[in-house]
Amino acid sequence: MAGPFSGVASSSGPAQSSRLFLNRRALESMARSRPAAAALALGAVACLLAAASTAVSSAPRRRGAPPRGASADTYAWTRPAVVALGDSITEYALIEGGWWRGFAGNYSRKADCVNRGLSGYNSRWALAAVDEVVEAHGPLMAAALVWFGANDAKTPGTGGPQSSVPLEEYGQNLRAIARKLKTAGKQGRKGGGDDDTGPGDNGGRGNGLGLNKATPALGASRWPAPSEDEGPAVVIVTPPPLHEQMWLERMNARARSEGREDFPSSDRLNSRVDAYAAEARRAAEDAGAAVADVHRALTAAGAGRGDDAARLFFSDGLHLSPMGNAVALREMQRALGGTAAAPERLPVHLPTFSQVDANDPARGTFWPLMERGYGPADAGAAAEVAAAAAA
Image 1 (cartoon, rainbow, N blue to C red):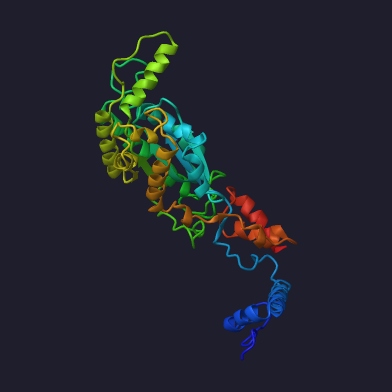
Image 2 (spheres, rainbow, N blue to C red; image 1 turned 120 degrees about the horizontal axis):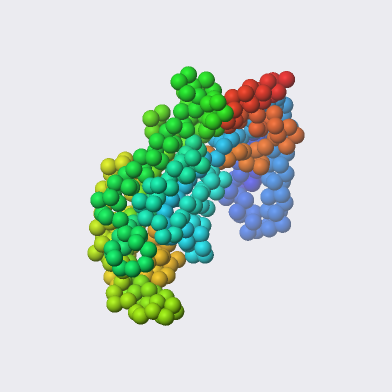
């Protein structure tokens, strides 16, 4: 009968790793009849694999080359940004049970997720404030979520902050916000200007992503870079439905705590939210943005029915509970999954610890990344590290 190591073929060297083929049936038979012998056999296998690994890792390596098993276009020197711009539903996503933890977790070590949730804001105010997002994150922006409408759809003249915005203006505001975000990212990606002489050669204002003519795209093997005329992925999120009775209860609880009379009806109605959700879909189509249709998904799940079961989707009738946030997160992931900024398409930020040259991390790992166009915002810095690496 063939032994457990029959068919073993091994070799070692800088360009070839050892290969080991086990006779699975023989090993299983040995494990049943002679467990001690099987344990020794497995120990021998481990020793052979360790020896092979040592032989390969100790082989000579060209100075300055990336570590074995790593490809310089698999990693990024600079992390892009994914920005969420919205109202309190976005701001409150940061608390326990919110959708932010799952959202940002998907981009772990691939992008910096920025929460620009602004409680009480509507699309009109967001349009005036979006320049802050553009200035802070535009050059590195891979994607942006835009989630307004809950306050825009508030019934006019119902007391409290007058955040309601006419339906037509709401759609125009969303289109304008999307255009600003796309334009900001496009300008940042142009890097070196007309001649595109190097990574981010833009008077020190480059984006560090190397998305220009002269340098390879960031993580080209895993993130298909947008064209020169294309900006970051923009996703417009539709406003969620309401639980009107639950929200009215919350309104009245606050009124009583302040010594005021109860409200006769809710200041927010699903009939208005439905129209604003439809307008958000139209705005996304016109602006060339993706849609995360949270309104449709929650409605299909029963959140808009107004019964006791629907309460499970809300914390107060307007803001979402963990169950509602889970539905919202799924829709945002689905929308981003069809873009170049999908988490699985983004490269890992810097090589993993097992692929860093422990003896010479600068020359062996990080400088090659910079030389290949993944990083320094200043072209002069790129020249310096290239000269040092060649020294």
